[in-house]
Structure formats: C-alpha cells, structure tokens
Amino acid sequence: MAVSERHHTSSPSDEELIARAVSGDDGAFAALVRRHTDLVYTVVLRVVGNEADADDVTQEAFVRAHRALGRFRGDSKFSSWLYRIAVNRALTHLQKKKRRGTSVELDESPYVEAAVAGERVVDPESFVLNEEMRRQVREAVEALPPRYRAVVTLFYLEERSYKEVAEILGIPLGTLKTHLHRSRALLKEILVSRGTETTRRQA
Image (cartoon, rainbow, N blue to C red; front, side, top):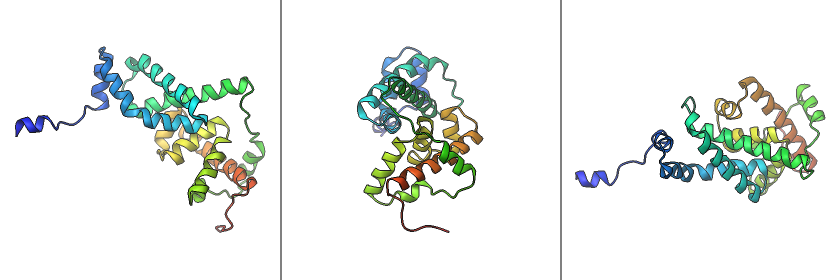
C-alpha cells in the first residue's frame, strides 16, 4: 500500500517549483511553463488579437518571468504575477505596432463622456447568448483601446476578481472600476454601431 501511495503523490505546488527553479533546476521552471502556458496564451491572444503575435508575446513573457523569478516574493499568487508580466508585454507589443502604423486605436472620448454623464450601459456579458454573439463580442473587445482590452479580458472573459485584476495590472481598485465603466460604454457603442444590440432592453 505504501508503494502504491507513493505513486499517487500530488504534483508539486507552484511555490515548490519556484524554489527549485531559483536554485537552478531548469526542469522545475519547465514544469511551471507547462502548467501555465495555456492560460497565459489565452489572455495574451485576447489582448493582441492574433495567434502569431500571441505566440511571440507568450514566449517573451516566460523568458522575462524566468529572468525575474528570483524577485518573486510570494506577495501575490504566482499566476497573478505571471499574468502581470504577460499583459504588460502584450500592451507593449500593441504600442510598438501602433508606432509602426500597423494598429489603429479608437477615439474613445465621446464614449467616455457618455459614460461619465450617466448614460445606461449594457454589460458585455448580456450579449453572450450564442456562438455568433460570442464572436461579435470578441471582435468588439479587439477594437477597444489596449488598456481597456486588457481590463475586459481579465475581468469578463477570464472572470478574475476586482482584486486580482487590479493586482495584475498594477492599478488602484478605483482606477480599475473606472476603466471597467468606460470599457463597458465603449463596448456598447461598438456593438450597437455594428448592429449587434439586442432588441430586448432592460428598464
């Protein structure tokens, strides 16, 4: 029985793998990469918008995480720390593309003004009714300015808590809530302009 139990021991925790990786165990870091690649790639893909760029940014995020691993103090979950690196790399990537003229960012001012004025907005999740709606929402999210795209991706699509999103993005909770309010207004305008507003309106 004891032998059988040893064969069914649980996988090492992130903290154990980090300690081993910091000590020079490359296999331990490889295990961390395998454990978190899918989630990191999904977030990066939603922020940058295409698979080729997502592959490059995800790889760069793990390279930077490996270099900085010795500075990880465990004040937050490893996944949150890793997400922060990945999202920062994704936003930097989009900024570089914009400077090269390969990305266009929407002028958000009229939408922000409407949101601040108190215009009722529709939460993006109310549009997620079927596969076609999900596709339209994904396209609308990709049209958001990068910082709002990251907020929507983490909060709505990844379903992270307010605290986690603020931690990942390195912003105060109040700033996050402002970004969410503005991003919802932008999403509504984008969806309505593309003819995807539902006919049913809530009071």
